[in-house]
Image (cartoon, rainbow, N blue to C red):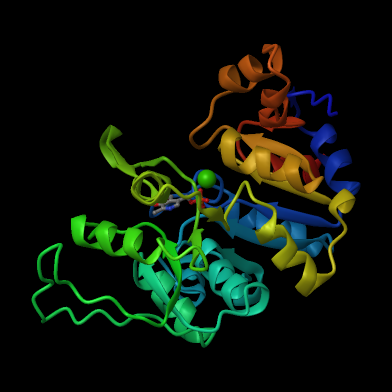
Length: 304
Ligand code: PLP
Ligand code: CA
């Protein structure tokens, strides 16, 4: 379908592209910041785009923080004009899905972290409260809650065998929904280390339950639908900027957005060109329309 160009652009070419769009969607890690380090120039870029009348959104697969905590992070890293309503995380959107799409009548069993738990509570979606003081029991006698109607899997540094066992017991009921916050396989940490992502934990639950999770985060379109329904966005007027070809760029392709790869994160120009040159038509959706070194290149685009 698409004939995506993978065009490395700068200066007036960036300006022309931005002039043709009303909305800019930024992935966060690898685009706006790397962990706790801001990408140089990113706060100025956000301000500049807003001064140009653009709507700016932040769309992250990171489910570990509730929205309010992202606002604090933006402020801590030097952003002065990011509002909570502009931030769409896989935790926030998972809660929105359970409340508004699934209209869940029952509880959610969560494998995840505080970000997920807080967003579900905020949305009024009931969850199984784990009694952390009680002994968890053996695999034969741990408690199961009969009201569970959904299992939601996200990033969980306390993932263990009992959680896996409980999730696959709940999922034996074919009416129990199975959701994953995001499919990310791993994430870079400082010093060259990586950490397994939600996708790795979801894969374990999928194997144990012989079921497939519905993914809420990128590359699924649900997060775009979430933004579009609140802000009435037109895909053709929207640009998706991301650092990971298999999630961000595929997300843009799936949602009908123009896409831009920035080279401050996970994926490289070589990988993008590899997908472009590949004979496999499915890989074409991993190819970005445009490539920049960093979003800071937007600044010089407006200076010229
Ligand atoms: N999930 C976790 C737990 C992460 O640590 C990260 C990146 O740091 C992500 C997801 C990916 O976030 P993003 O979609 O903003 O790149
Ligand atoms: Ca990213």
